[in-house]
Length: 169
Image (cartoon, rainbow, N blue to C red; front, side, top):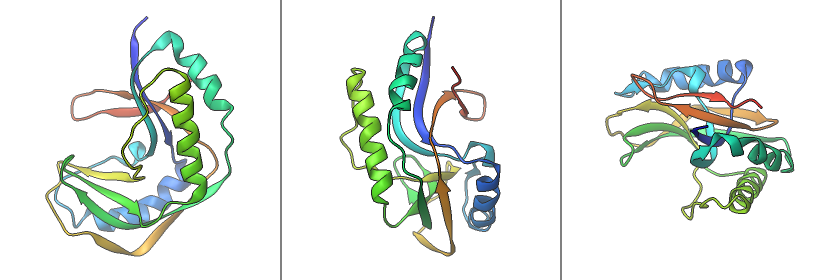
C-alpha cells in the first residue's frame, strides 16, 4: 500500500457552495490570479500530509469520536497571503466551537504520532492561486456558513493544481 496526502477540513455541500459563490465571484473578479474552482473550496482544519493508506481507517475512527457542535463561520474579508501567493476569504474572528474542533483534531494527530502544527490556526477559503498582491478588502456582504460536520480529504496532484476529495472507508 502507498501513502495518501490527507487533511481534515470543513467541506461545503452544494447549497453552501452556491451561497459562497454569490460572495466569492464578485471578489474574485477584482483579483489577478488563477481562480480556484468552486468544487474545491474548503476550510482546512488540520493538515496531515503523506500518511500510510493502511492506517487511514484507524485515523478516521479516532476522528469520528471527536465531539462536533454545529457552528457558523463569518467570512468577512479577502486577504492576500504573500508566502503562498494566494487570495483567501477569511473571518475576522474564530468561533470557540471551531477553535475546540481544531484542538481536538490536533489531539487525534498527536495520538497517532503525527506532528501537530505550532503556528496560529488561520481558517480560510483559498479563492485564487498565483495571485498578485492586493490590500485586504472588507466584504460588502459577508458569507455566513453553518457547518454540521467535517471530512478527511485527500489532496491529489494534477496538471494545473491539486484536486481534493473526501476519503471514504
